[in-house]
Length: 193
Image 1 (cartoon, rainbow, N blue to C red):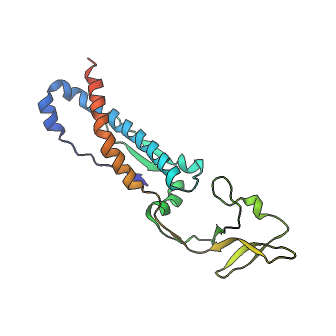
Image 2 (image 1 turned 45 degrees about the vertical axis):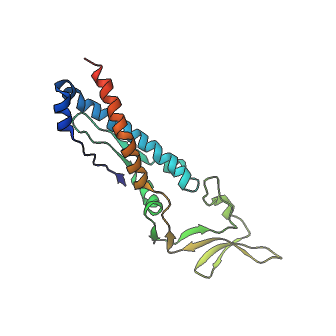
């Protein structure tokens, strides 16, 4: 997934008003502004992922990558790597996941690790059994004198609600950050000879 932005400017009018000195420095200032905006956008995505998602793993947070602008190509972007986008797309867009194999979904009885995922070691033991559930199969903890407890259910479809406002975050950061970064970069470039 890529968050691409089309920033329209009245660059030609600005250059006419500012003169040749600005025209010389504007491309380099724009490059810096685009790259600094992309860095701030990447940081915002990571912060918002922690706020909006249930204990995201470090792999998810490292999945936001930057494509930097160059002098020849004044374009920068923030992309979600393919491996992370496979599962994060349901948090962004919502919808129904239909995995090729039934997916393990924990119940409230299943201990989770610090990232909110199934602790695999907790599913292994002599008192665990795979048995039918109301909707398919599941892993049950079996006791001698108590009824069995369902720990994990295997589901063929999972419904997701939108939880991570990826596009809203991107549009907001770019709208607020890029103009400030461009003004700052242009002032900095103008100090150079």
